[in-house]
Figure 1 (cartoon, chains in turn orange, green):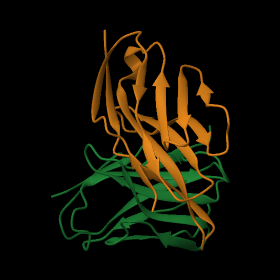
Figure 2 (tube, helix red, strand yellow; figure 1 turned 30 degrees about the vertical axis):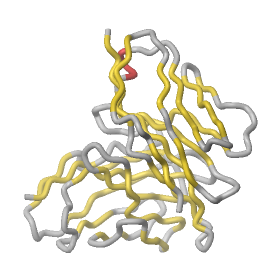
Figure 3 (spheres, helix red, strand yellow; figure 1 turned 90 degrees about the vertical axis):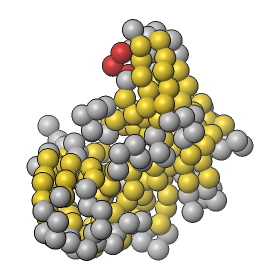
Figure 4 (cartoon, chains in turn blue, green; figure 1 turned 120 degrees about the vertical axis):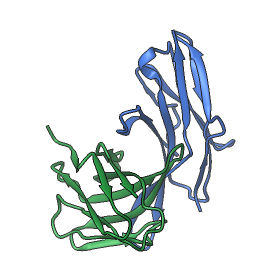
Length: 118
Length: 111
């Protein structure tokens, strides 16, 4: 079964500093996807970035980048130049294929609460 | 604007009552999902549907039921058999390999 582990329950960072949120995963699938979502206090889940297991380059989206190390099964999120609005819960997730139904679902980690201090 | 609408935002019920959470999408996505989130926890999959008139149980389906009579609608019923129904419920949809697109959630409190 697929599993996502986020070992940092909370992180505190000064504004404008870079921050790395850790994510490790476990799967026996050869093909999978890794996602990061942001959840502000209002509750909605905002998609940030995606990395495919066969992608050779690390994904980047503006201030977000994904440090993908396949051999270590890690997919850390890096936020450069953090802002006060980055304070939120961050979830790492992995796509899991359900072969019988040809379906795909996301398995989520426990999340990391990031607080940006002014 | 296309999106997913969950209503209501807050819902209160007495123990022993069934309650139905609404989820409507106008993204024309085939697949729809229901997740449950408990305080300080990640999301756990309750039910999902890949196509109209078909749905499958997720990891924590006991005490829940769903229907998918229309492509745009995927309501979730929390039955009295669900032992700990108080939680934040998120509906999502996707098409192909696109990321999950979420609604704003419904916070259910059962007393």
